[in-house]
Image 1 (cartoon, one colour):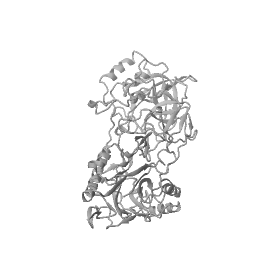
Image 2: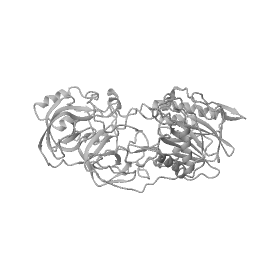
Image 3: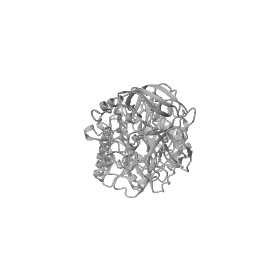
Image 4: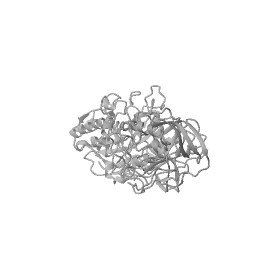
Length: 613
């Protein structure tokens, strides 16, 4: 997830050579030879691959019409040659990076001289594709008030169904050196329009307006649709080719960005240059922005549990600490009571210590939890009690100084907590037998905290509960984040997902612990839940379920309802509840109250499972 990326920082240095992987030898020299023969056109600069054949070269008097001007962030303007060549693989547009606020306006005919380069948003290690651009420009305005080149229409007919070509093994899996096939692959199609004036018609919003003034639409209304309006990400091969990020050229102070939720529609024509940025890849930066027509999406409410049903939920409350405004506590509390129907056991992720991000050695979260449980009571909920294990300072990752951890809330009127020699941050709970039944040596306790898999990551919290005389083991998790993974638009295809290695080890550790419980009692009621930070089809989830020890309960839902998070317009699974074999009958609900909405109390949707032990 994204937390605090600066959006207004000026673009730094050009990275001219990093993406030369796969570039055909001699092509730059050949292009250089053409300089003296004919004027350089924009399509000569763009070439037929992702890397300009003139990368690093000086060009003079490149002609084009200004199609858009950006006065903030990466300041510059786009120009387009109205006289296209006959090769669909070569873009007719290019970005001119000025650094200072540009002095041109849309409709100016200009001649630009400068250095061709490949800028990589996010840097070389991000895996992002590069943006071909002209930097250190000298600009001559030839005339003004010219008609803009006709916008290329991006729609369900023009975007190919296949997402990306396989990367060249000889180039480390990079697609940079491959000739673009815009009629075959969606990523090649978008790249062939890089820097050009493009447009979309009325399109469904699949990613709500975020704090950075951007939203996501799909130009393919039928692609992997969700009943509530989104687009489901159901496998590594269903990337959803119709997704497109929308920003605007006008500064926010001058023109507020529209607020949209998933399922709303961006109506009319949205038109402007096609850019590429590090936070989502191909982006239509609107010179003309359509109008948001609101839909009817409302936060969901789960069904209350029956008298004989145990309701167990998981909720990532996004770095909750006492310095947060009371409104956040109240909103989260209201959600627990009204949307989650006051579950009997609630595992929380991202509970911070008593002074939040202040980095002073504080690890207790008693004030955080007192404030939250009081807010739940004030909202009409039960008088929850809590159990947790404080982490070691700065050892569990997350926001520096915050010391996030998992916490159990439970309703003592419905369920009891079995306390057994409560563990500390470094003491592992183990499986034993008490009165002939499986039990934990420490409850609450941490699972295998010394395992290197949990280095700089949250350790699992295990607890023993009793409901109507039956013991239920609950293990709350917050696996390692996806930080460091390459985006779907990476120049590596398939993208490198480096963060999976740690989560796989974490899943194996939890699976091993569950197998120990089941070895003592094959009929033990075990729930593994939390922010798993991975998909239901991932190797992480497969490792958790290994040997039939657990079942990912979200798989009991229809595929189009399996999501707890929306990222770059893809509705996907991060939060899960998994059940042991004894829990044969249950009802499962991914309660959509946050991820689809611009106004969020957290960026995750909570999950609830109800069953009769």
